[in-house]
Length: 241
Image 1 (cartoon, helix red, strand yellow):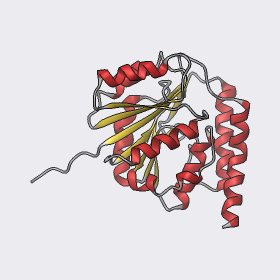
Image 2 (cartoon, rainbow, N blue to C red):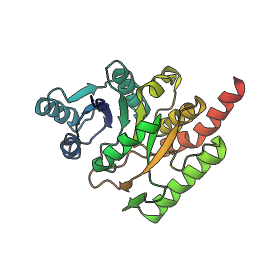
Image 3 (tube, rainbow, N blue to C red):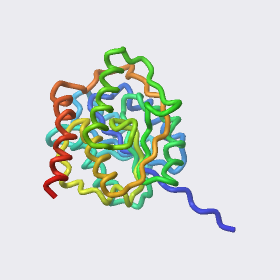
Image 4 (cartoon, one colour):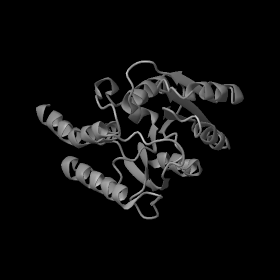
């Protein structure tokens, strides 16, 4: 009896000034079988792009780099990365932060979750999910953000803002990526909302989220404002259609 082939996964990691974290992340990801990596560098001034190029030479055929030179933004990086991923023969597309806050050791559990779901979220807010090294103010802000998103959008998801995700190819391809307008972290909210509206099955897998050890957070006032407005924009858009 022939065993079914394991699904191939492409992990998309956007980077901006992550030269210290990237080599560690790549090493830990390359331990896993049937996993490829696409680094989407947003024209980092600290040389992250050059480090990424070096990783392609170290892991030929498994690590690729997309160098962006246009307007910066997490959402823009993911849109470009998704389009490149969907042009390749892969089964699963994952999202992951470059700062080591998302544990590569949890990747197998997230990939396994895709056997019974269209979208798997690495969740901090389900049983056994935890956060390490966040100050109380940051924890409260994250809890409030998720409660706020759930109340406005009626999403039945505990961690709407998680950036550790795995999509089945067909589910990702069903999204109107050319019409997604969010630039920052609200891109995560918008794509989740669109997936649920299209009937995608979403499951949450517990993760331990660890605050970055090196580098600076990309969270800003503009990013927070966009995240506050996005749920209402999504609801208003639905009401117009």
